[in-house]
Length: 363
Image (cartoon, rainbow, N blue to C red):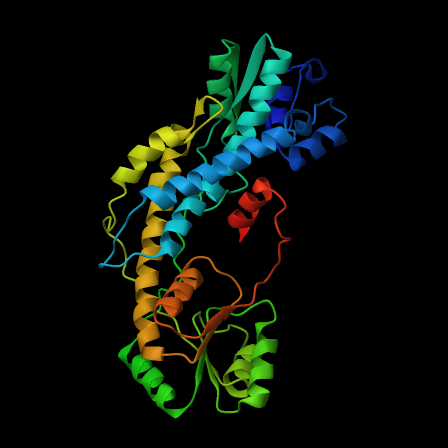
């Protein structure tokens, strides 16, 4: 089971006759390499059918339900569904969804072929883990070991000299100061005219702003993001569309601000799929990357809640509903502030339970 061409090269350097091996590429780049080198391989789709996909979907739903029901956090007396959703998706998109795919493929292949020995890559450098799934974040060796052990199959590790690990970086957006001067500016703007709050720019949002400005000359836009770097665009937003950009600060986290111990104890058992408990595989990422990122999200949601009280927008517009934008939607609903979401994409109405799960996952 390989994800990188370098894994094949490591076997070649050890003089293995590759066409005598049953090679299953787990990525397109590995498959392309094998094809270009005229090396025989089995496509992973042979081991991942619609039933496997359905099992992965239901496991993904199980994680969402577990976090939604069991993760009861408070930060400064507040709790946002946006933070809970952020945590669930951090687990799923950050590793769980891909890990369940790997478990299905590896389990099915080993069960079908019953090999005499399973060759497992041993990377010389640790995983380059990040908030989402990095291109050089490998989980197949550990999963392969667990499943081979279950089938009592012999294994042999092949050393793979991969690139040096990069230090994982936690997302550090919104670090600029939200000063008292900015607060006074917002209060002054609120007295002079109508304010429309935008959670971010993108997906032709400038066209929406332009249409609004044509019929409402006194409207001012506030965008919760860093200032547009392109000077021409900045002047267009600032002086043509009457827009100001507001960043809000969050304090650096030196220690944990939320008690995750109860939900971690629950996840220790819940992160199991097809008889393979993968909590230990994802634990480092969960503790060092996902949880600190969720704590930052909790701080951001509280910060934007305070800023909304100052801005008091006549209307809030967003093109998605996740993270801070989802929290803003919650706040607007609770405070009876006008808001709507212009979705940047669409999904078809679900025809069955599986499609409902997909829609909830990406919605």
